[in-house]
Image 1 (cartoon, rainbow over the protein chains, first blue to last red):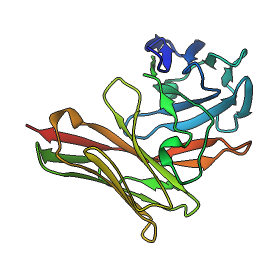
Image 2 (image 1 turned 90 degrees about the vertical axis):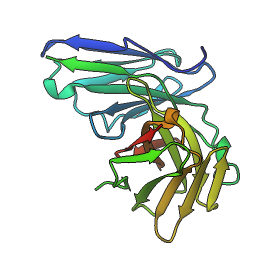
Image 3 (image 1 turned 60 degrees about the vertical axis):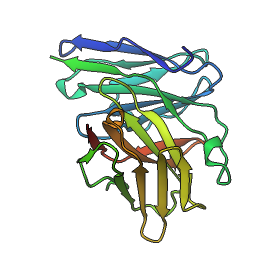
Length: 122
Length: 116
């Protein structure tokens, strides 16, 4: 399987605990994104990596959220001191970084998603 | 303010008929649009896309139409099959502040149910 993988698929934790999720992107993709999806809503962008550099993190929901991609391959998303409002599906996506502005939409920088990690905070 | 809107939370269609899913957007700077399909307990799967320089893109049973003047796009599925039952999201890439990467802004989704 050469798609995006995420681990664990499900996580149940108690309020106040720290949790960490892992994402392994498609191997040749240098761009990696984290999103969060709550019930009845579309995915919401959190942060983005180009190789190992975190180029956008202003959308992380609070300073309890942090992400790393130390070697430019897999990434981790950590939530410290979890709250019940953190319960959601956390999605990772990757893309190749090749973007065509218009003549061939199929070649645009399409993001491919993993199966997600479902977090439940009790 | 939601920049991408899907105003119909659900749609039911008979097998073999056409499914039409609608999406409206407010940001005239969007130059590219995507549709994703999502089954329960899975991540979104890329379905089809369209550039703003086109008004139609077709891939098998799936066709996306873009009306830039109305800031409206629609996904047509013909013929609809029970396996098409899923949540469909419309999305548009928005520039991330650094570099050329794009974050996706999603609509809230439409649950399509294809009845056998």
